[in-house]
Image 1: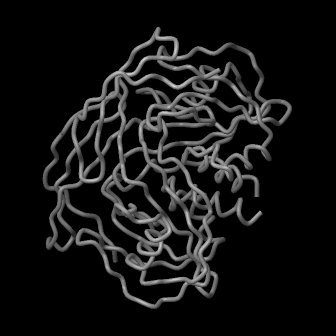
Image 2: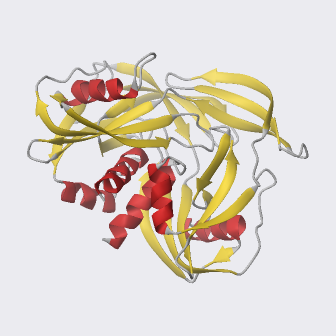
Length: 179
Length: 179
């Protein structure tokens, strides 16, 4: 049976804008192996699978610094300290797109990357969204809203134009909810 | 139109076992905004949606240092330098489970996290896998093979027992391939 390792020592190596990086010294359950493991600690994240009243998906096009290129994604972001994940989902949808909804469903949650990251991403479905506001972007954000049918969204996953793992995961959670 | 930002300066902050961490100073296309952005550079990854001859999914149970708990995932790992992603997928499947296949299909590729990570994860489908070898684990790995029907796998995503975003993404790519 696979068992949890024991933590012997934790060193904080450095902090980025969006994470803390730790080195964790851990030993195997039988005490025979000992290693130093990278752990990246981030705030929890949320994202939103949001449809407007015409059943079009509300997407965001933006420049992403990790891949140094423009991506097409669903709205989302980090949960603020003390904020509930549903509140964060509503806030991110409004800030990034100007849309709101009164029909929210929890689709589930994934782990960002359990191998070396601590956090989760909760996904919500927002139905019949209406454009009731305007974008309210962070100073470093530049986002364009795009509307797409579910079929075109699926085609764009196949063609790798939509490729963010958390967006593709959100689509899986939506499919499982819909089945 | 959303445009790519311009890179002004790159500082290598530190390196973990599995990544390099850079701080990138970039300016917006119009030159009006300037910021420092976290970028985590990793090797490309692969994972494998593998079925045995009874059409059961071949899964791996292991302790994961990021979430400090036991997870259930599909086999996968980092692509070695100079290795092709399909070769890496075949190697990881054999090393982690002892299974091999002669029927491989590329299911596509996702970005690990385009916001701050550089790398991709390619997903392969392996059909009619046979247990032709034995596990050959890295010194720090301890993995148990589990077999599950697709239906039970889907239930475990819903119940969050299977939660790795790259595993849930792989399932989405499989569903789109199957449609």
